[in-house]
Length: 276
Length: 282
Image (cartoon, rainbow over all chains, first blue to last red):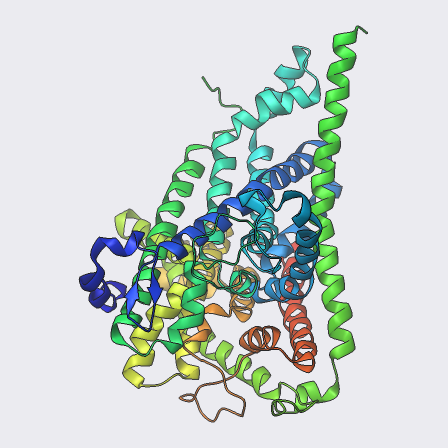
């Protein structure tokens, strides 16, 4: 269905659609690069923040806390998954964006000359979207990682402790490596969610189809441009170009999901199973 | 205790402290989110929020009665699409599912679960909105229904799998055909779990905004019937939050509080229902 509806754009722009950075509905010239860049950049920021946070919390909940305390806390964190994304967006617009704007104003005199932090302080932009996405995907990482950590056989821990390792060394050198592919799987699931996330990102990213190096610059993502412009697309080519963006997004998330599934399937060893 | 060991213990304490910090930070986000929305929403909620139509631009007051009814209608449509497909699919996978067709059904459900909601919106736009010619409650409901299917299917399947085989064998031994066993024995035994799972799948789509943007669109008035564009709570929150009017922002917070209470309430309720046993044993 998506293929058929985007035929017009594919015929008009060919593969160049993927790396042209012009987005001009008036002249009917379309290239998806700014959106692909925005999606990948925000997702990268989100994962960079969410991975240490999520993994740390998962280790704490699986290895340190007694089950009676960890189970209710995990349930609370899993509640965050159920919060609708538009509500994250609401909080993002009114709390996160002003906060980031004041941080930007504070650091501008010091770091303004570095391209990564250059540009006027809008508040909205890549950084805001990245942080908001991080908050949204941390619960995924925590809940799946904790489960794989709990599935690591106790004998593995006992063996490491018996060799004289501290508990931290046990976690770092034995438990986490043992659960590595499961944890990676949780990260990919989180990635898929971050890539496809629409509402929260649309509300805080600033919606400007440009390639910007600065974290503070407004940008645009594939999902956001669909949300904003789909109902306003008056021309057939315009509409087809948007559908093609949807197609690209679909393909990317499909690939990420498939990788995640493979990784999760390779763990789940039988309890007590030996491992080379 | 030599120096190396003390050093290792220090690192251990440091790192475990960091993981505890990560946990506290994550929980802090939840507490902050709930607290902030409750605080902002409470001060903006009023009786007219539930009973009045949105006020014209520039005028204070008004409510979101049409959006609340719109959301209810959308969810009803979604339930009529999503529950039968998801439920029957789950029964198929749990009771009959062997071989390659079953694994393809399961795989398709997982893929569907991973599809970004906005892409589902586009697909339904092409399948329902274009043939009808305009945006409608029906199209929005179908989009939400499609999103429900994988969740409803997987939870139905999982709860049916929890029913012990001895129950099935007992029914079959009494001479009941396969379908009678399933309808009269297996499904009632897992009834509570299945119902909870279906409720959760409904709660999941209740807050979805992206697929509604170009299926149900929005509407500032009551939406008669099923073939007109309709307002819904999530879309109203989106529209009001990015609008430049102070009064609209307050309405958005109120709507956010109502939506959040609805969704999280369902989740907590489900948790308690499941705690006292999802499946009746014998």
